[in-house]
Structure formats: structure tokens, C-alpha cells
Image (cartoon, rainbow, N blue to C red; front, side, top):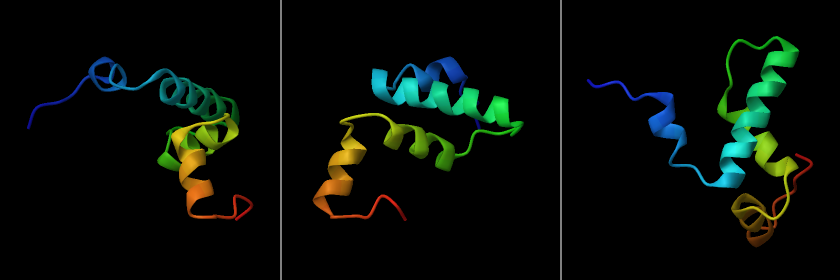
Length: 66
């Protein structure tokens, strides 16, 4: 099984997704979390504005508070 390098994986992200991942990484570091998990990344995407995830939430009338 070949290993992917972070640069190869993260270069595929658009600007909003990359910025959210970067913010999630910084948040985890400041809180002492050793790993960035998907929930950290999703949280940072939702903290941003006008992303595809926001459109999905609106389309399905999801409650962001939950």
C-alpha cells in the first residue's frame, strides 16, 4: 500500500477547505489535542461563511445548534 504525503492530499482542497483544515489544526494545537479529527474540520467549515456545507444544511433544513 502506497503512502500519500500530506502535501499531495491537501493540494487537492479548495481555498475554503484548506483554510478550515488549517484553522482546525491550530485549534487542536491550542487545546492540546494530538489529532485533528473530522469533527474539528467540519466545525471550522461551519464557522466560515457561504460554503457548500452551509448549502447542504439549508437544503435539508438541518438545525445547526444540534
